[in-house]
Length: 572
Image (tube, rainbow, N blue to C red; front, side, top):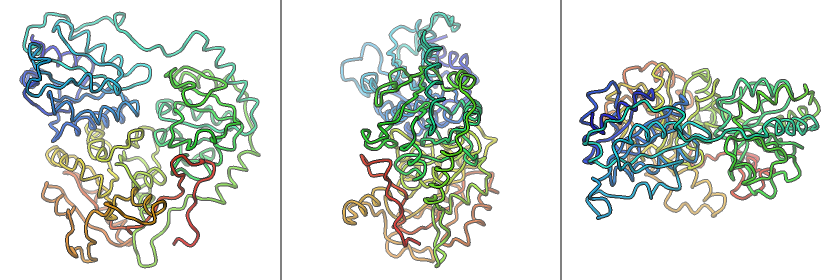
């Protein structure tokens, strides 16, 4: 076999079933060999789409997602998706073509140093020089991507390496792989110190991040035994049942006020698989500086990076909780839970019903989506106001049903994330919650959905603005809406007043999907029910909402998380 066939056979050996990619000159040998292996290839419409589909596949399954791009612009188009996977710890392997070895370093056509470009945003990268090293490199790349703190790995393969013969065996012993240590020698001592802090606390709060998604049973058992309220980050959504009596909700910039009060007024914060991100902590120096901290993380570099932990535990969340649960005493935090319940009652997260004129409220819309799907659908989002409304009001019943770009905050990620999730789990109902700004950033991937007959449901919240930027302009820049209005206002009958650009329903139909525009709250349930019946391809529901609808509560960047801006009184 040649190098290209060796790559594909190694992917098969790793259990890969689906790869996402776009061909080009430097990967023609790889695509020429595709017919020799049993791999499903999804032809995207732009390489960023491939990166996010691979991420959607990985986020949904926990398995390694794979994307392929050619050299030059193909490789650079992957970069945003690679950075997104790095920020959110998503296990992915990216394979890029490179110009032939004799042409490297000569500014050849479509040559870029993609290993250099991506150096700060990958766990590891390889520029393959010897075809005999391909099996070792690919096996190692998958091992690195999913071990320790998961993340992206890049393999850059020159075109001539793909063409020459490869005699190496694809069976690489596990003992020859480099890896990431997960637990150091003092694990038992760390657990004992953490348990002692937890047992001594009277007002503890769990602060659950994305590293907890694969520890949901252990988290539930631990929380119930110790009787500790549970908050979560955007990335930790789904790790704990949102309808549980110990559930306090999402914390941070647009988290529930009572969740922020709980974390900033507790005496011990138990941080599980989270990294003290600024969107959670606000001004770090005011983020409950008196509280004791138990910090569990698989990545030792996160322990003490932003906040000094009194009891660090270097382990996976599941490993740590399996040891902590028997080590901790059964708890009764009735007084503390009563205080949290009072905050909930005083500052509820309200999903407003329609305004008197029947105008749709986005918060209510997302609550209706939960009711319709029972919280069992996979929901991906783009980035902006709609993302925060979805995080506040859509309640997934299981982990890995809520997919969003957290650390990088990438507009345009939502549609390919949804498609990647559907290719991974075609048995699941999949919804994309998006905005009129975000959807246009990777809208070309609608072609993939139509051709694959993927029944993705798109819930488009159209307020005519880049909504989150507009909200900041309203609150902090005297309503100077500079370059955030996306088109002229449509009229109630759906015809443009001047320019409606684009007409999303017409555009969806042009791609070959189905669409419906919704103006009134009375039409919402029927529209959602109709969309759920469509099974032969994608469907878009465009909901027209008030252009100045805001996300509340809100902690301004760098503000005090314990003092969120609440919804102004008198807002209907």
